[in-house]
Amino acid sequence: MAERHGVYITEVPASVLTPVSPLATVPVVFGTAPIHLSKLASPPVNVPYLAETWDQYKDALGYLDDWKSYTLCEFAYSHFQLYKQSPVVFVNTLDPEKHKESVSPSPVSLTSGIGTIKESGILANTVKVTSTGQTPTDYALGTDYTLTYNASGHLILTAKSGGAMAGASSVNVGYDKLMPGNVDTADIVGGTDGVTGTVTGLEVLKQVFPRLGVVPGLVLSPGFSHDPVVGSVMTAKARKINGNFNAQAITDLPADQTAAQVEKWKEDNLYTDKRQFNTWPKVTKSGRTYWLSTHLAGLICQLDAESDGVPFRSPSNKSLQIDGIVLENGTVVALGPDEAELINAEGIVTALNFIGGFRSWGNRTGAFPEAFDPQSSFIPVRRMFDWWNNTVILTQWMYVDEPANKRLVEAIVDSLNIRLNGLQASGYILGGRVEFNKEDNPKESTMNGKLKFRTYLTPPSPAQELEFLVEYDAEYLSAI
Image (cartoon, rainbow, N blue to C red; front, side):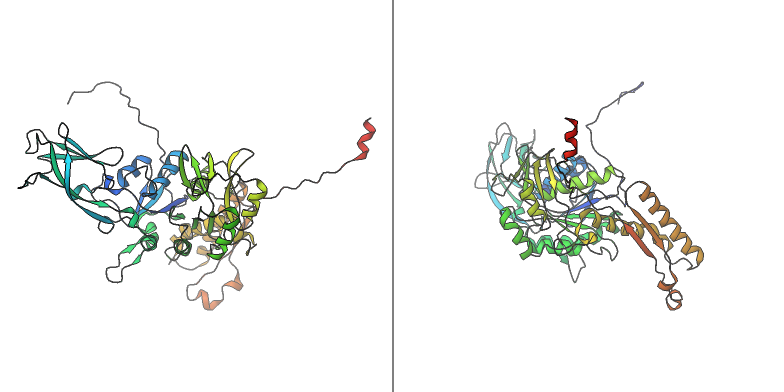
């Protein structure tokens, strides 16, 4: 190696690397990834994987433009490339031990010692290469040939100089390949094995904090969340994660439903929870089609990052990185505010191309219109309550099992009130306070180590309706 002596500079491609904080808005996304392209020795399957950059995602889970087969690729591209947000927890449910198909050996032609197998999802560790003819000879990987993938994810077979395969014009190749289309509702929902304790699918959500130390903020599964079973389980699992934390589920409604149909579909299929943010229909950007939930998550994380991680702003009427709104079949959806208002009135977030370009449109959770209170019906208010509750758990956990005396009570009350005063001064809340009241803490409770603190919190509601009263004033005629 040559000796270096001087000043050297190497430029690297720009990437987003945000420090991982337990209080950051971290999406947890469930779906399928082209793990045959992973550079890891053991690609993650049904385990939470934290990716902080685009390159980190590609190296660990692989990337292909086939978003219908590999749903996690859509979210990764949107979140890292379009919205420049980080980090994300990905849970790949495509299991190479389960979702695969064996392909019998068949001839592959070699040109100058190179052959391409134009099949997607080939698992390189299952490839078997033999010579053609009546008495086939097995070729050895690394000795006789090498395997690589091209940009399309197709396997390239290259004969090694001096190997037994050198000079061959054709070889027989057999392999196993991934079958992402076999991943169904049951795989996304997952569960816990009663014998081994192994968890799969959405059940993995409970492992995110113990494994990674980050609190799930949003739960998504683009490409699957429009299935009512998946949607309901997503919402259920977002509540009381590890018995403590609360997140919100961003679910899609089927994009084959028209504006007139989707409102009834939402009610019939019970997409009606206060921690469920429903989106409809799909959106496009530069020739690619996305589920709207993917973009709403990127927008939410972007807004939170601009506000020191405090989720007090509504994503409604904020710019989306899109250039079109479409149904499943590609039909353009061109809503006016009056039509979008009817969709919003059913607790559905949509997209609008009106003043200011393409924007997210809708403030209401899935609980609306049955629920009217701000905590249940407004997206930013619901998120603020969940965020504050998660904050309290993370910051006050250190006091658990300490002596229950006056000093402990004062430390808890003072620290939380200081935090609330700071939030109020920054405009994140209208006001808030924490109290330790005698009537909430009878002797029977305190003697058993049970302390109860009362919190009052008022985040601002979004200014959803601005009404101006205009009248003709005849007094101004005097100006004539």
